[in-house]
Length: 562
Ligand SMILES: NC(=O)c1ccc[n+]([C@@H]2O[C@H](COP(=O)([O-])OP(=O)(O)OC[C@H]3O[C@@H](n4cnc5c(N)ncnc54)[C@H](O)[C@@H]3O)[C@@H](O)[C@H]2O)c1
Image 1 (cartoon, protein in one colour):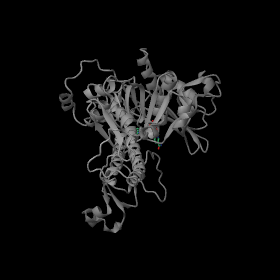
Image 2 (image 1 turned 45 degrees about the vertical axis):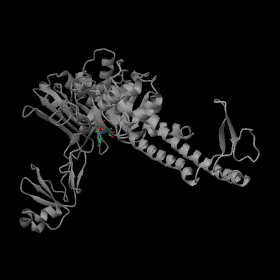
Image 3 (image 1 turned 180 degrees about the vertical axis):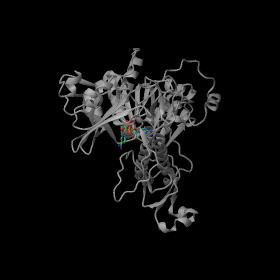
């Protein structure tokens, strides 16, 4: 009864929590129920016989009669030596005591039954999730429908914590049966950022009859809205090849699940990955056996020091400006960060005692020392790879990202990666570089899903065109900003020239030329040059003869190159 009362609730909600803990709580409940069941034994006093079985000469014949009945119902009734029961008074008393005892027994048994609800569905599913396929217990628990159920649930469960061998010695030799293959979830994606969500959406729509699991540590997921491949007003029907604009919205996971019925979002941090077993485990105790896994766990701000609470991390402040209240130290690195206590005890304090008391001090490698209220560390990001590395053999890039090939595959089989967590391992095009930005996270998530699909469907796939030319559109102080190719002359050394055009309050245009060819551009404001420049960069047309005319505002450059 207890089992029936709670089994539905426990099976449904139990999986959302740490199952061993719930099973432990179930064991405590069972202990309480068992104690309650034992209670009448101590409350009732000595056991008194209410009936007696009398043996007659006929060996097979017993007569049962009530000792409480004043009237003998059976001619063969014998008096029971030492029996106090014979009066109506005593029998009445016994019945009065009996009913609460029965209630206690009933309640105890019901509470005890509750334990079944935690042990059976959660226990069996826990073993299913955690036991390795080659493990005998796994085989035993999952494939032995014909075996005795109590043994499976009870005794077998007790030895779960033991290793295989003692169990096998106890149970006898391993049955020579074929191992039932682990039922794998087709697609598992880790990370509810832009890369993970894009990948999950793409897979869910391409494989509507397959389950897609998105496991994410964050309570909200980041979704792309208002996506458009940039379309320019001058060439109305033409869509840009690489430029795209979209908004990012944080939304509850239910929005995704409603849109894609085969997509399930699990809000729990992944704490373990075993690539050999194709197994992912989350903090809430759930385990997923994947066919294809895509890791999109993003990156976290790189901190100058982990130990000081006065050092805060943010992702990017590329554009710190000097003002009367801002002082910038150029061409230096942080040598060391001191807490107040450490600083006062250090040698530096002797020469810098005029600095006064500050919560935190920073020593730069140009010799300068500053006291501060807090330090903002905006020194880039570190890919979130920690939970995936232990016991696996991922190849990492110099920036600690998971190295991926041109199909977004990591070095481990069936594991893909996209977004900030990965670092490209292929030779990039001359005009593209990896930067950890929204645009690339979306493109990589989308392309990773297409690569996974191609492999599942045994189709071939080419590196997507978005990796041909670096392009990024964003907003800065409400000005549209377009970055194209080697917009900062990255990797060009001295081998480049710059053309600039600036109209105060309206636009800023910078073009990077190398060998007479356009290789990059920065467009701020409403220049409307992005499509033309995208084409010029992709075509690699020789522009030497146009010189500075290229940015002459009186020339309609669109017509010029049409
Ligand atoms: N400006 C900002 O503050 C900011 C912050 C984050 C991301 N971004 C943008 O997003 C881009 C990256 O997108 P992305 O999708 O690669 O990363 P992301 O940082 O947007 O998302 C990573 C996701 O992975 C989840 N995650 C991390 N570790 C996990 C774990 N062990 N188990 C389960 N989930 C885990 C996080 O909860 C998060 O949902 C960046 O390039 C950047 O442009 C910007």
